[in-house]
Amino acid sequence: MATAVRHEAAARLPAMAVLASVAVLIVHLPAFAHQLLDGDEAVYGSIAALMNQGGALYGDGGVDNKPPGIFWTYAATFDLFGNYQMTAVHLLALVVTAATCVLLFFIGRSISSPRAGLLAATFYGLLTATGNPRLLAANTELFMTLPLTAGFLLLLRRQWLWSALLMVVAGAFKQVAAAEVLLLPVGLLVLEARGARMQAAARFGAGILIGLAVGAAALALTGSLSGFWRWTVETLTGYAAGNWNPAVLLDRSQSSIVPFVASAIVLWVAAGSVAAQWRSLWPAEKLAVAWLAVSLLGSLAGGHWSWHYFIQAMAPLALLAGLAVDRALDTPRRRWIAAAVLIGVTVPAAGWTSFNFRADPLTYDWSPPVAQHEQVADYIRTHTRPDDRVFVWGDWAALYAESDRLMSSRFPGFLRGFARASGLPPNNWDTAPDVWPALQSDLERHPPRLIVDTSTDDWSDFGPYPMSDYPVLANLVASSYHPVATIDGVVIYARNT
Image (spheres, rainbow, N blue to C red):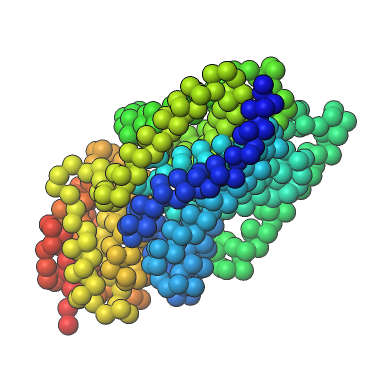
């Protein structure tokens, strides 16, 4: 009976693949309805635009605490299509998602069957769009998951060196990819004979070292090595520690973890049913369970817990769910199971897709009054020349992208990732003592045509941090600028003539 069912399913597989591809495409279409899907995209874009002017990443070409992969990707895309061409970036993100789906198909097929692979690919494609608009963004986690998935496929094939090398590539997009290295001991135990483990571990270690050496060379050749250490390594502990605040974690768990689990509850139950059979699992299945565990660790490690942080865990979650559903479809209850999975997956996906078309990704979760950022960006665009630079005080790099103007400073925002309005002292990685001399130097070298102060209308809880509290900005405004407009409560200053 099971064999007949599998033959019937195999015959329908091409048609199912077409339907699955269309479904995945539809749920990702809202990405093309908005210029920006997340403030992070604006940060990457504003830095990439500076890099394409010849600036060095982590120096005068823009500063952030993330590894270089995402900035190199945006800069290359802008170099081909023009600065702030986010449609091209979103198309690239869709291609990366599709490539990850293809890899999951190969993994699922190798572990179980082509149907399991198709289910895993479909689940991942839907999961990465079943959530708030920011989940659709061309963010670090999405790009990181592609080499992580390829690395897992090679791990299954015991290609230890190449698997490790791909994990380093993933780490070039986000530091938490390092959690995947914890797959090594599990892989050695379940895939290699006792006598072969040391040699396999040595090949894995060689892959890590080669990847790190190539990455260091790339940073050195682009003049970014010292800045990389300062901004992405030295700041890491403090940034993560600042997020591990009980009140902050509770808020983030309610806004991201709870709806993520709820929207994918059918897949979580399916994946859990596989993990619960640990003792009877095949080696490759055990490795897939371990992949989900270490990916969840990576997703949670930073304490930020935004929905898109869990893209790292979505690939192994989709794989395990695909394996579980594939098995269940060979049982007498397959029609009921198919209906439950179909409803449990498509209803949340359809609901979020409808919402994501209509919502403003930058303000959808705001309580009124909502920032009229497009009005401010329009003012900047119409009162400056294309070669003018501007400076935005606050955490609103989106204004650079929306106005199509370069930053006057290397810093796209301030107090990013900090619990603003918490009453805590505003001590953050991007307000450290060495920030202010660099900021002053930037503003002297590239005097902004306009200074935009978002703190005056408390955009993104920036009200408690007025420019008057920061001497570099207070002195500059007092000596060289005057207010020319107030739009939506945001005060805009122009340079004295």
